[in-house]
Image (cartoon, rainbow, N blue to C red):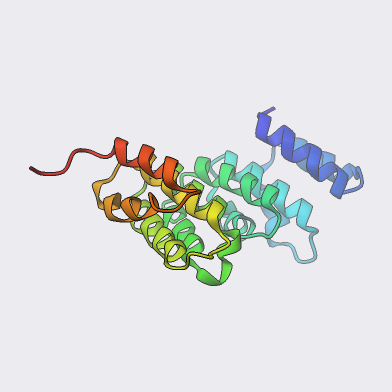
Amino acid sequence: MDEELRSLADRLRDEADGSARCERLIAVEDPEELAAVLTRPGQPLWAREIAAFRLGLAGDRRAFEALVLLLNHRDPERCVSAAYALSRLGDPRTPRAAAALATNELRVAYALTPVRLLTALRAPEAVPALVTVLERRLADPADPHWRVALACVEGLGALADPRARPVLEAARHRARLAAAAAAALSRLPAGPG
């Protein structure tokens, strides 16, 4: 069993009060049975999460919408599990969805996992989205979402795209971001001249 699936199963067994249905969804091999959980009304969240996660790992794109909803959940563990499954799903809509969630200013408190997913995907949407999020965080010196800003700095360093230079230079002036910004800048290709 995949380590992430094992972790998800342990967490959701508690939520499902050890139900036999939970055990069945963890073990079932039939993708149609899992997909039915996503379309049948009245399913508990834990059942939908297991089904979406398992389908995502299998590359079944029917999991996409459910995983995107879970990526934007208030529970960080659900977000992390959804990001893991989305990164393996291979759906071309994933980078756009992650960028939309990361840049949604009304949901910035939940942007950490979408920011990290964008970095992992290394898609064309990643750098513009991370730059946008970081610029917004830097605009207010009292912004409480410094962990999101730090994830953007680290992501931009990992992506090593020269378009990030101006915002990373600005981030060097924030105490919580300075070391990560300097490290990220050191990974960028040298500028012209």
